Length: 80
Image (cartoon, rainbow, N blue to C red; front, side, top):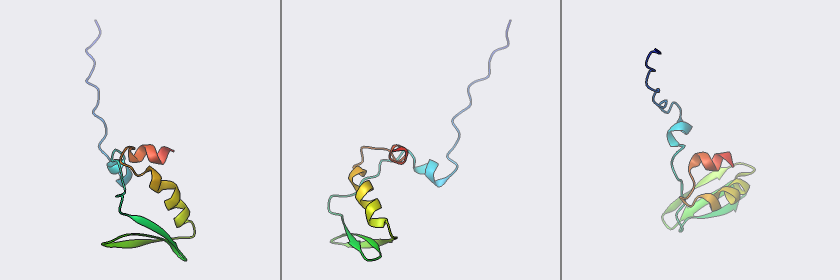
């Protein structure tokens, strides 16, 4: 007779920052706007904001913001 099989190993614990966040569903609030600036893009609302710098920052924001609805997991967004 065959020896009993060992139980399946548990899923590995998240090891990196991405793995820890991969299952989250990012969303951007409806009151947040983004505006192109000479150095990148400014995300802002009535309470404040932050500047993301880079030559293609505004293009990146234009492509990703419509998908930040809370309906898609981070790993799905990164997979395309």
